Image: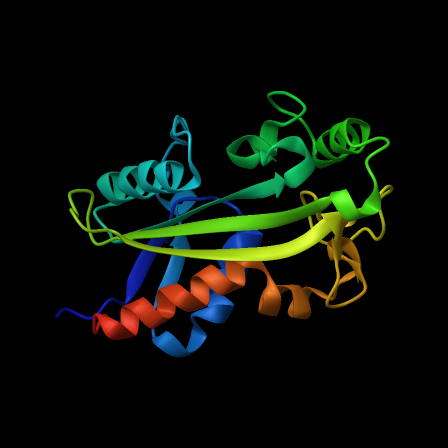
Length: 203
């Protein structure tokens, strides 16, 4: 089986590229953002995380001719019937900021007791050897917590300031980046993907 040395990430997010390259450091794989190839964003029309990740990975692989990796992630809140899910980034509307989304969630959960504010971050990662790969590798990570009643900390991004991490007694916005990258949903899914690469002798 041909070893993999370079993968295009279906994202232009510099933080995400750094995070993945750090995790993949010992694998011999270089991860480059699709923005290096002027790959346009593709509409995320899936109704599940895995569908959206496949759409993004296939598009990046087709545009660059390289193997591609994509993630789709979001947060599920039990009291909101697992919403916002795939709509996490645009919960408060198209083009919403992290603060807009956090404020909407806090509003929607007004009066909900602490015990009922359970939530989890989900991350689905898809790897495709080419845009015609019939068997993409798919891994998943989940990060359990609950939604606070007010933001705490200014680190992280997304819902981190209102996402309480019971194992650490603080919000995701108060966690040191190193620690977050060790325990987060994305870290879990990426480590599982590395295990898949080893199993398939890609590295």
